[in-house]
Length: 205
View 1 (tube, rainbow, N blue to C red):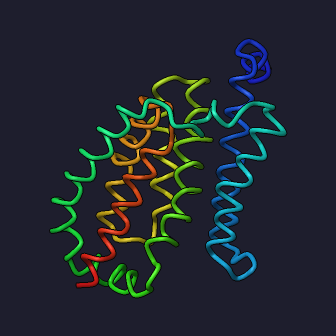
View 2 (view 1 turned 180 degrees about the horizontal axis):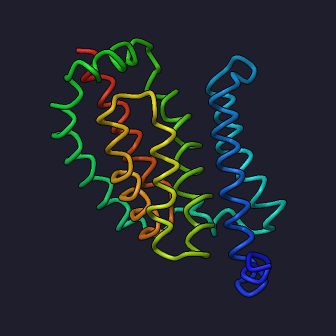
């Protein structure tokens, strides 16, 4: 069988990538169809952080550091984070005030600690895409992984403002590049966290 021959030839990288793709798809489906325990933050932390970490440790038998769970190149990461946040602030100061964004995010900043809840949720979200999925795919297919993980990332945004969803194939790829460049998912997480909080505050004004 061609697929079996391909897996044998390419070794661990191929079957790990296959596991990551299947697991990622199933986790996104479960999140979409089931409100586990009635607590979105707890459910998403388990699905997007707990389960991938479990797969890395128990199935792949590797360190999470190999999947971006580390500080990495902090100098480059800091530069990318500050530059991206500055650029996105200028862009979202306009975009977040459009009717579609106001309708979706207008009440997002109503809670006193909304920014903390957003950060906790996005920590798992970013590790899922820019850690677990990206680094597993990169071993098997190289730079194409930057785009492949962004495809699932884009699909996960369906239901949000159309402009946001359309931009995700590009933004997700860029986030993947930063993660790969710094060897850490933490910097895309910081950028995404800033983006989410800034958008919520701006849309709610």
